Image (cartoon, rainbow, N blue to C red; front, side, top):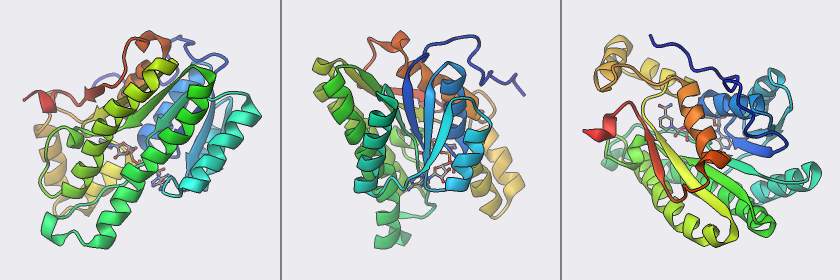
Length: 261
Ligand code: NAD
C-alpha cells in the first residue's frame, strides 16, 4: 500500500479566502475534495442529496457547511448556487462531482435506468456547472471542475449508460471551456480510474464473487492498485487552483495508467 496523500493540503493555502461548492461531497471523492479545499483555506459548501452524510463530512472540517441538494433538480441547483454566492460573497470553485453508477448491458438498460444515470451524471453536472458559470462569468474569474471517469475515455463492458454519461462530460467540458475562456473562467474535468470509495466498495460487494472482483480490479491497474480518494482530490484541487491557470477544456486522467494502454 502506498502512503496516503495528505488531505491536509501538504501545507499549501491555494484557496485562502475562496468559496467552493462540492457536490456529492458527503462521501468518497467529493468528501476528500472538500477536505482538501478546506485544508487549503477555502470556505466549502458540501452539497449532497444525503444531508446526513454531508453534515457528517462537514462536521469534521473547519470552514465547511452542508446543504441538501439533488443535482438532478435544476431549479434547486440554481437556488443553492445563488444563495451561496450571495451569502458568502463569491463563488470561486465549483466541483461538480455527484454521480451514480449502473451495471447493465445495453440491452438490459431500460428507460428508467438510463434516465436515472443521465439525470444525475450529465444533466445534474451540467446544471451545476451552468449555475456556477453564470456567477463566475459575471465576476470575471473562477474555476469549474467536473468528475468524469476513465469510463468517459474508454469503454467498459456492462457500463454503457455510465460511459455515455461520463463521455458526455468530457465533450461538455471542451465546449464550456471555450464559452468561458474569454471571461477569465476555466472548466476542466478529472477522469479517475478505480478509486476505493463507498460507491466502488458497494459495487465490489454486490458482485457475484467480491474477493475475485477485488483481485481483478487490482490486476487491471498498471500501477497495481486502485486509487485513494485523496489522490483524485489532489488532481481536482490542482485544476481548481491558480497553478492550473493555463489549463482549460482538458480531461485529466488520474487512473494509474489504465487509459494509457
Ligand atoms: P460515492 O458514492 O462514494 O459518493 C457519491 C456522493 O454523491 C454520495 O454522497 C451521494 O449521496 C451523492 N449523490 C448521488 N447522487 C446525487 C444527486 N442526485 N445529487 C446530489 N448528490 C448525489 O461515489 P464516489 O466514488 O466518490 O464518486 C464520486 C464521483 O466520481 C462520481 O461522479 C463517480 O461517477 C466518479 N468516479 C468514481 C470512480 C470510483 O472508482 N470511485 C471512478 C471514476 C469516476
